[in-house]
Structure formats: C-alpha cells, structure tokens
Image 1: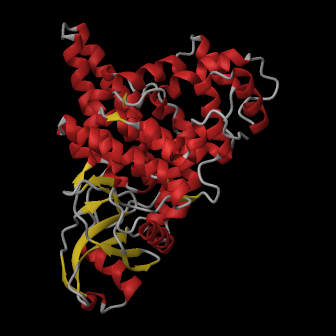
Image 2: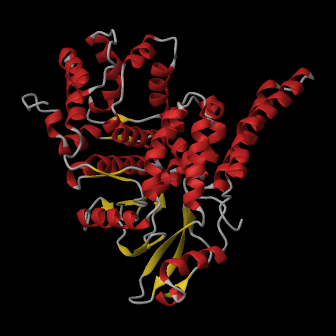
Image 3: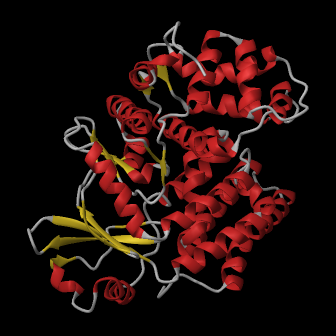
Length: 443
C-alpha cells in the first residue's frame, strides 16, 4: 500500500464486507451441512476464515478501524471460548502488527516534520519498520548526536482523514458488526473511541505526556518509561527500549512470568493516578512488555487522561462500601453521583449483589485472574434473561467516569489473558489506603 485508503466510500465498503463476508460463509456452511458435512468442522473453518478477514481488513485500513480491533483484543478474554478462540490470534496480531507503509511515504512524512535533511539527524536509520500501530509505525534508528538507539514513530499519510471516516462509519455500522464479537456491546466502545482518538493525532501532545510519565517514574524499580528525544506534530523520537511483549507472555509464558507481568501491570495502573496524576488510557498488550531486569515497559502515550485528584474518590468509596457490605451507603452514594438512572426501581441489596462479585479480587491477599472468572462475570450481567441484566439496565455510567472504567476493565482483561495470580489488595491499599481502613473518611 502507498497510503491509508482515505476515500470514505472505499473504507466503508471494506468495513461493510466484514459482516457480509461472515453472512456469505454462514450460508455456504449451511449448504455444506445439508450435503452431509461435519457440523463442528465446518463451523471451525468458517470462524477461522472470518478471523483472517477481520485481521486483513482492519490491519490494512489502520486508523480507527485498526484501533477498534485493538480495543476488542483486550476484551476477548470475557467472550466464551467457543466464540473467542477463532478470533484470538487475529485480534492479538492487531496489537503490534499491520501491513507497513513503504519507505517513500516515511521519507515524505519525515521531510514534512523535520525538513529535507532529516536523515542527517541519524547515524543509521532502519527502513524496515520495527512495529506498526493504528495511526503510525515505528522505525529503529541511531541518534547521531550521542549514538544512542532511538525509536522513530511516524504517522501514516492521511491518518487524520481516515480516522474520522472510520469512527463515523463504525458508529453507523455497530449493529451489523455485532455478530463479529458475540457477547460484547460495540456501540459504547465506538462512542468512547470517537472522544479519545482525536487527541492522538498530534504527536506533540503524546511526547508531552510521555515526558511527564518518564519524570515521575525515573529510576523506578518496577516501571520503565522511555525518554523523549524529539517530537513534531506527526512524528516523535524516543529512546529505543526492547522488552518481551506482553502478547508473547500471554501466548507461552511460564506461570512465574505470567504472575510477575500481572503484578507489574496492576501496580502501574493503580499507582499512576495518585502518583503522577495521569492515567495511561490505552490498555492493550501491544503497549506493554517486560524487561530482562523485570521492570514493566510502558509504550504509546497517545491516549492519556489527567487526574488532578488521583483515582476518583467516588469510585474508591463505592468499592469500599461494596467490600464492607454497606448496601444503604452504597445506594445513597451511587444515586448522588449519578450511577442510578432517574426513576429506576431498585433495592440497595440488589445493587450490592450486582457489584459485589466485581470486588472479589480485592477480598483476598491474592486473586487468580482467569478467563473463566471474567467469562462468568460477563455471562452474569450480559444474559438479558437474568435478574442481573435487569439491574444493570437500571444503572448508569456518568461520562466523567467512563474512561477510568474502560481502562480498569481493559487492565483486568489483560490480567485474565495472562491467567495471572495478583496481590491486588496489597497493591491498591498502597495507593488508596482509605478503601480498607475501617474508620477512613468517605465521600
């Protein structure tokens, strides 16, 4: 490809082909079953072909389409295995891989950002991309000034136009895309992506956030943030730091490696709001790795939220009340904070019963985050025939808490993909101690 496909009609046609392709293969499979084909074998073949098409289309389009696929990849642990397994590998690929843009486009973009002599800044520049992302790709190079290895992230030509086109079309097509990911609500995910993706188009903002994070975690024993070397609107240069990708540990890590990665990820997520007053808001395995010395490597700061007051006190107090079984206090706080829909007929004990299972990881010294556990929670609240689903429809997520909720659930999704044992209570207590202190003031 020489550019991101930019024309709205062209991109819409490719996205529309996903559900149409699934429907066509389903019809063909039905015909084969009528002629005596094995039902399970045919279903497996159809799912594999659908997954392959999903990766090819979203990866080629990049922009919002690829970002959408990356977001889905975090939540696949919550989808029942019979649906998730065929898509697992395809979605995981979207965390770190996609068809690359040619060097001619890289040269064009870097010339725009740093001038015609941009190559003179580097002692060496690898023209083969080391990684690709939703709106840009990364090249390995050597910074001429001091000889250190750097990562050069370059935005794709047409990324801005393609991004806005994708998010419009995905919003319109959320209903017909739903069959691709059974058990997951697509429309809220697309709506939230619309609000956040605009912020990722100017790499100067990303560089500023990364500098702040790097300053707070300088010489940290558990977290490594690469330093920023230089930036421009469509390109950013950082230190090159190589770690083992989290996706690799998810795929074939040992028990010790899985548990270590899970604890490091949880420690970073729960410390950043109170320590740096920032929240890394793009939680998928492609943005994290583990260094040889055991530290968590954190990449890609395009999506970051400022949290001047740390973790929202309403969420901390709600969790405290749920852990302590204080249903009346929980109901009162949720109503005042806007978590209960106006006019909803719901009892305090019902709310406590709905939320209590989600606090289970904080109820013991160590918790096993597994696919089965998160699938059980998804089944419990996602079955429209269940009482829990009716309770869920009476609740609301105020917009100011949407991002924290999505990031937390995304982090939990990764922990379940890792199948890790995490000392979450100990980690959270370090940064939100009032959650576990019986006499702590509550909001």
